[in-house]
Length: 416
Ligand code: UD1
Image (cartoon, rainbow, N blue to C red; front, side, top):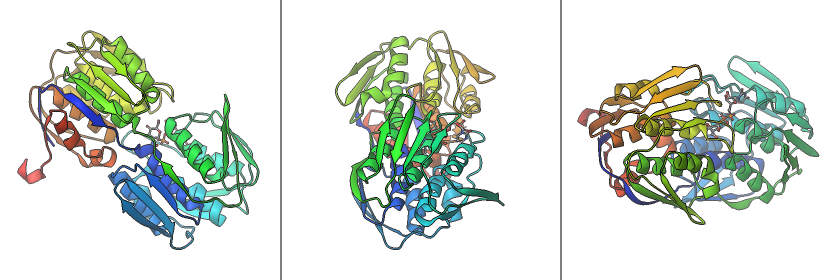
């Protein structure tokens, strides 16, 4: 991607459906033999990977614009294909549905990824508590259960994936599954709503979520929630270029932690029922923040926020509490003239007035977004490699940025 920075971004952009809500919803379709129709599904590479996986597990896939219908061609076999699971960690969520439907499942272990080791021990402990016998063999996880039974499971950390895994399995378990210390991210709550629409009963308490399983679940039509991470990224793109960007079709309270930081940074924030607008009159001021489980500051917005703070006035600090080694963007930002250093899980930033354009490489999805933002702010032409990561998570990124006034071009390696 070739980006000529220094332009002020202004205008409106519509948020896509959330990738992280669409993926578990696609896997939830494996819980029923009836059709599931999902609305506002983003056309992303990760969604394609999820569809490749459920197709291998017997689903037929029909697209109509942003509407996706999943119909059962054949009941799912108990073994998940290797390639899509190794390509995308979220694929591991098929374990619960396959186990619940078939009484056995064999799924590749998803391993680590660019943002550090990402174990699945909480998923496995939870499924074991529901009665599954689980073995790890040569890179595969094998699980068996003669009927899952609802139990109380305590999560040591409110893991998004583990909560989703247990909601999915619990939806077809006998009796009530109680998850203590669950993740409360909007995408997780969204999955709970989808499962309720399919016939399971999901209720949220102060410290728990309870799911009452059903013997069989029904099909449904369900709308994917807006992508708060994508929305936040465009707001940050406006802010870093000293512009004014409105993102429409969002749930403003899902962005509350980011908006508070914008206000602390001296930016002007306005919001309506389903839109948020952020304007920068001059440079942002440095702020201090920690990422954390929702409603904390989202770890997925930490990398692009770091780009903003790299050019903010004064000092900032950013402590990463969810993925300790998620700082793949820092080395590249240093090459663009940022002044920052890591101290354990905390990044200490001294804001500079300007970044300099450079040739940089995106190591993962959100670090890629951070580098796009940095390049938008750096006067001159930057070249970003590794844009396939961006295609995993941002629908029509170059087009949306162009509509806001950015000079962005996607090109083939040999023509750059
Ligand atoms: C999901 C999101 C990801 C986001 C993250 C945190 C999807 C597809 N991905 O990832 O974009 O950054 O939530 O909001 O929705 N952990 C364990 N054991 C486990 C599971 C997790 O130790 O069994 C740890 C992880 O290593 C990490 C922390 O818990 O340090 C959070 O992970 P988790 O909330 O599970 O994130 P994901 O579901 O992988």
